[in-house]
Image 1 (cartoon, rainbow, N blue to C red):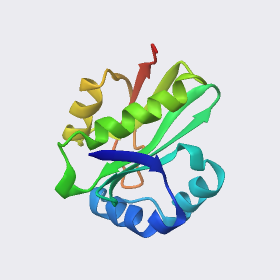
Image 2: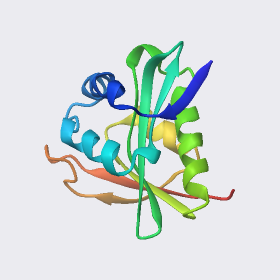
Image 3: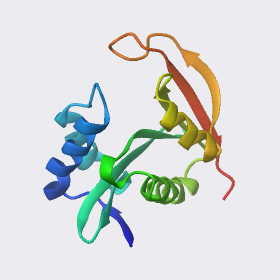
Image 4: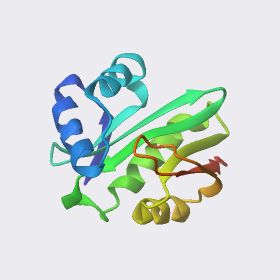
Length: 145
């Protein structure tokens, strides 16, 4: 059973491990500390048998929900964990915003499929969005809760 809860300080090292194994250019530890200190209600982890297997960080900027980062441990992918994290984040955001946006690498086909299947639409391509020069897609979804 997948349990989604707020991230705690003691989860940080495990979250960073998932981040580093999920992305070629992972966020710095300070990014996670910022969200843990300032937006902890929207920094969630998924656990199975009390073991953290994924996380999501969302935020709100100018009345738009933002998915800052979402990652699931490689061994736990395609088991509904990312979907569950996104659903809980949407529930949290739905009473505050009507739209959610995120950026994803144009080369990240599995993430693109995941978000498209979840109802996100590609709105535009952002040139050289990532530090390595790769483009990103801005994806958005209107919440209809």
